[in-house]
Image (cartoon, rainbow, N blue to C red; front, side):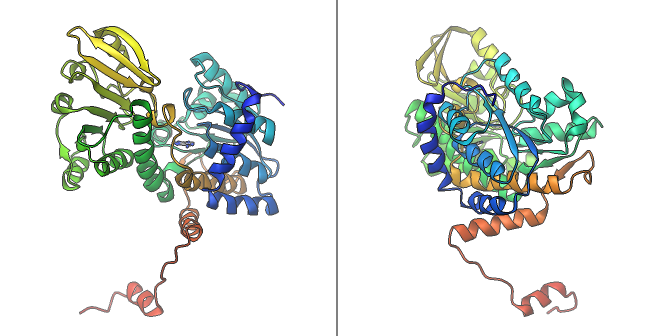
Length: 418
Ligand code: ADE
């Protein structure tokens, strides 16, 4: 078996951590048990480009249990957990191509290694695998049944490919499932972003002005969790409706230029480029902290920061200090990459349980509908979404009511009024 990981000797720790995460992934466990019985993925090759974490390991093990042959590379050079990569190879026989801190060339070589496995399903977090197929490996597209996409940024790219008529195979937008974005993006990103900031800096959040850029599901999660920790939260948002929601959710909303003067900690979650840039760096307070929770490392204009700085030094693990000409110190966490994965361990397993249950069930759905889907971006089928919510509640030991026949009748009637 071919693979490329840092050190197989790390596998022991990786296996113990994979099992620990698995204890919180009960929905995936239920799916895995069924997969072992039914083998619905028998003969299917799956190429996955995901963050190489304990949670992803549990997904890969589940896909293998269903009969699939999986290949895994990283969807971010800083999120790979080398012990997990080692254990997947050594203990589970799953080929992994990922090394924490790999350079750009290695990152893309590893994507090529996954594509060399000739996957029939691509499973992406950020659409890098899909992009590679659509640029350098076009000849493979006709063999691909479908793709699945984990994140908002990836879905935006895919929709643009669809709109431009260049999408070569169907893709299911796992991110759009309610059981994905309402939980993973909000509670997962919310908690793990603060986890990353705290592990990197050990700052007290209480009393700090924390500025969140973007009030999508990730931004909402970060804002609400930070408020819970006692921060004075400011939201910066370009969409009037979302900005209004942030106001009525009780946050201070202002322009980025005003926020830049006031903030102690800045978190970008927009999915767009140069959200924090020279004009903001110029007016930030001494010792302002910046980090990013969006998929790509483009939200903070690091080249501009570098240009304005007289020096750049690592002052603590995951913390770089840029000294400005006027002696102000600006701190950047995790090289401007996803701070929750670069400085912490990403979203907790309990929330990835639902995201990856979606990945597993949508891979099964795509395989069982091979040839029937068009070259479009599809939402997750509603019955898969509802089933995951039902299973999650069940595994949490929570029962809910169902409608009485009388209530059902009332809802379907239009003649009953006052
Ligand atoms: N994305 C965010 N957190 C993650 C995790 N723990 N595992 C895989 N992908 C993630």
